[in-house]
Amino acid sequence: MAVPSVGQNANQIQMDYMKILVAQLQSQNPLEPMDNNEMASQLAQLSELGQIEALNSSFSSVLTNSQRTYANSLLDKNVTFFAEDEETGGMEKLTGKVTSVFNDPESKETSVGVTVGQGEQAEEYTLGLEAVVLVES
Image 1 (spheres, rainbow, N blue to C red):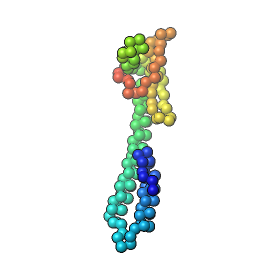
Image 2 (cartoon, rainbow, N blue to C red):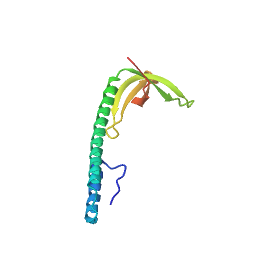
Image 3 (tube, rainbow, N blue to C red):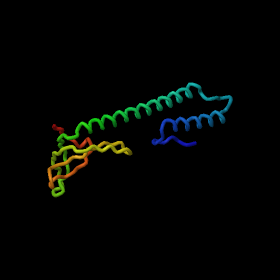
Image 4 (tube, one colour):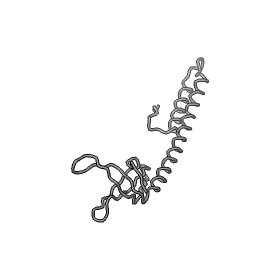
C-alpha cells in the first residue's frame, strides 16, 4: 500500500486511506475487530484535511487577486527599490516609474516593470512586489 507523501492532495490521501482500510477489514481477525472509534477519528481527520486544503486553495486565490490589484494600482507611479550595482557589487537605491504589470500564469507570481531614467539612459527592471520599498504618486 502506498504511504501518503507530502505532495499528495487530500483526495489522493483519502483514496489511499480507504484502500488501506479495506485491506485491514478484509484481513482482520473476526474475534478482535478494529476499534470503531479509532476508525471514525481517522475519517474525521481526513475530512478536516480536505476542508483545510479547500481553504488554502481559496486563500491562495484571494491573495493572487489582491496582489494583481495592488500591482495594477502601481501603474504610472514612482517606486523605490534596491538593485545590485554592477560595478561595485553593492546595493543601490533606485527610483523609477511602473510601466507594466506581469502576471505569470504558471507560478501565479505578479511582478512590475519599472523604467529608471529617461531617453537613452533609461533602464528597465522587472521586480517582484516584495522588492518595492516606497511608492510615490
